[in-house]
Image 1 (cartoon, rainbow, N blue to C red):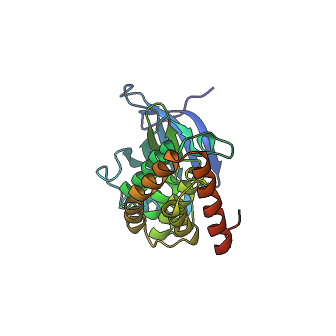
Image 2: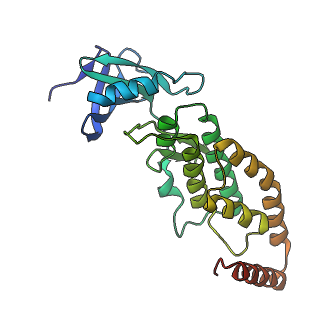
Image 3: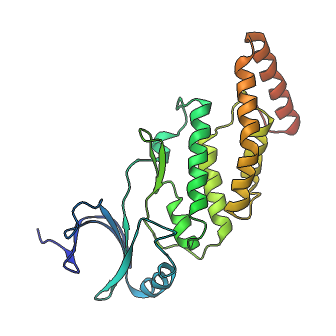
Length: 244
């Protein structure tokens, strides 16, 4: 099989995604084999000019995984380091058995990751926050992103807040034992109340101590106390029209 070598440096291992005028390739840097696997976003046609402009605004200070961009014939290559982890949907899903402390920890990691991408172009940050690109490294207790920048329509900063909110809602699934602070925060996420990731993160940091306190208080209750707390919370949600 013919080996594809770009710039006499990047050896393409496999094509991960392909569509008209765009492909994502996994590659290695043969001049620096100590580096992790690389992702090459390859654009042609009109996408070359569009994503050339978008990605020229990326700095390595704002995105340490960014390795630069170059032209190869009629193709623009935008290069990022790959990352380890499992897709978030493989870690947090219906029927998973994570405890509330773990859920709060990973929700914090997701929102912090979204916050540090706030300065990136929305076409970059929003793509990275999609489920296929949001990676959870459970052993290291870290959340990382994979920069597969598939072509999208024009985006704005609010989209990052909406996507981050959707990911957090997968982690903080609604539970009867959750208190008012957690339920109220999830309500705001469902309504799409935040215009950007900055106020979303600020609201999370404000709510977090109360969420933790309510969870700890519930844990300390005896059996009947827990049953009464669940009943009270269920009735409150029914009154608001949230359902059981």
